[in-house]
Length: 279
Image 1 (cartoon, rainbow, N blue to C red):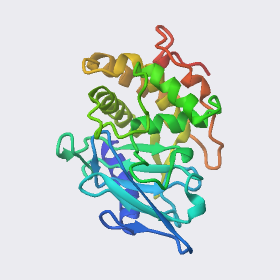
Image 2: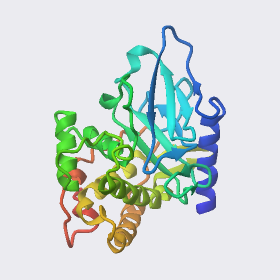
Image 3: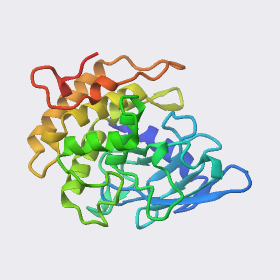
Image 4: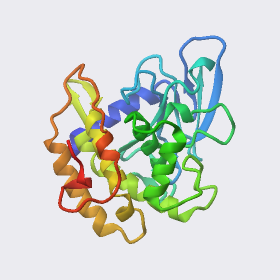
């Protein structure tokens, strides 16, 4: 299973990298264009694939602007000015390919990050893609939060970190608590990718419903897995999520994404399975 998953992710990454080279871009023909810049991290990620997800399927498709992060985890996407703030951005860290600068080695599990469309900006020093921005994208997708600030406030409450900008670069700020939480979230996300990525023939797809259920479970259990001494809680949660996601029916072609708002209600719920989620 691990070998099959790595093959799928390598094919996905190769398709993205083929059009863009290190730190470059692959842009649909349009005029005028604008460029946005940002970084990808739990620690800065080198060689991660980044793209503008115009159809919301979490996969790089023809005509979607793409790039590969450079030695500083930075990327540049060139696009139609009208697309800035209209579509989310996705980043994929690929096992054995993407380097996490926290360790200086390739990530041991592939995982997927993103940021919500409303957070994408043409301003300098923005567009920071991290586990935090990934949570915010899925929280906004539930329809439960009227504004981005409402979602950020809810995430701050779960993390117990009041007064912090959830979209800021915690590496620059040397925010150890947020960095640690992001590392733990990325580890949990990577542990579940075999349940999230699957293939039909030669076509790799993302099971968005399983991905959203995973993110909701992580959100609900944030208070127990955010810190430096959370290994036992994380190990238990990994096992619970694997069972939960494996038992979820895989998405069929053309099936609509589910609204996982109940998974983002917050709080560690004992005795009700991973995250205390309801169907």
